[in-house]
Image (cartoon, rainbow, N blue to C red; front, side, top):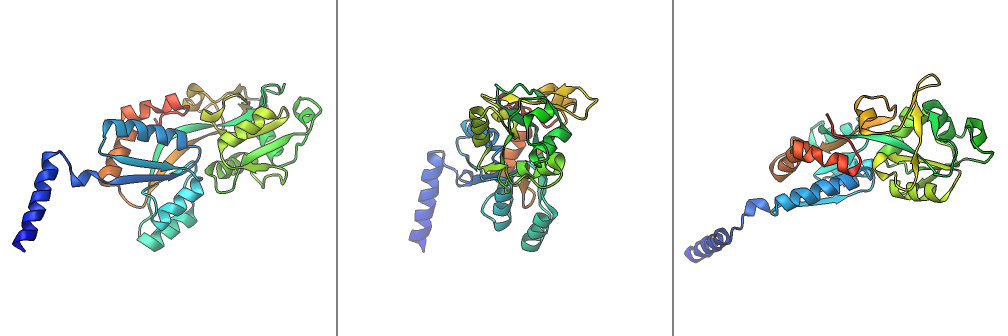
Length: 277
């Protein structure tokens, strides 16, 4: 027994000598919203440079996938571009006897992507909803060319899919809407198809044009910018969230505290999103 105790003491002494700390080996896993992947990876990259002892692992898959992982215990943080559903809260309650913790961490202007060659540049929220519901099927119905509208959208596990459906489409999507695995794929499709339309986070709008959006027929049209998101004149905006099973501790708490600090929030604009306040 004395020999065993001596060996443990020796290991601890060596660890202390080289600056090793057993408390700093905690890995934080982040999973969920594809909209938030770019932002979360940037947060993780900057944080780990400042804290070499930390390991932050970020993966996507969609908001629903992230929240399912939180419920089954395979991730520490679930990223979601929509609020958690009551059914998901109930599952957390049944499994962990907790209602979970919701942390708004950024704001996003949900962009409507158009091909740069499309002569349509602005639409009302109602028109966009009717287009994705399959009620408006030709660009000439909204002042464009006489050509059928090609629809691209997210898969049903995506928080963006759910938010856009609830707040813009307000009914089922058209069966002709082609679902793609990730916002980048939607942007690439719209880039190649002159008469297409898609939707997704503002940070991804590269090589396409943002459709200016009008709240209604009598309102001015606005593009999603830092100013229009902040003053709420752009009509399709939302919070981005992190969800946890319970109050964060340890490295998870330190990472989240940093994200919400002025330094963490200052990174958001550079990625194409907007600070939470």
